[in-house]
Length: 63
Image (cartoon, rainbow, N blue to C red; front, side):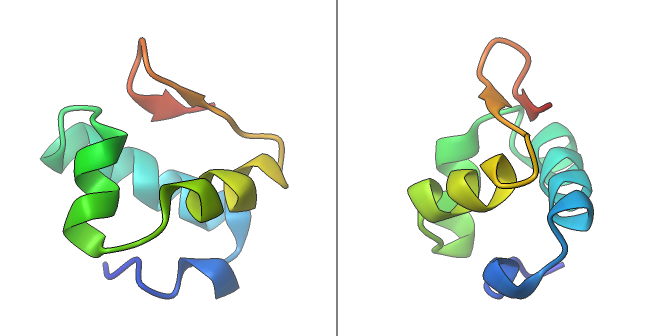
């Protein structure tokens, strides 16, 4: 799944996809995920925050 168009995605689906990618491909490292997909971390976090999700570094997931 390409996250390049994350801004137009449903935030619930986006959170699910991002958490899946974090778990399976990036060992919970959000910096590596945004670097790989060449997306803005702040914009991604803001999009997910609009639905009440925040990144928890200690678990490497949005919740």
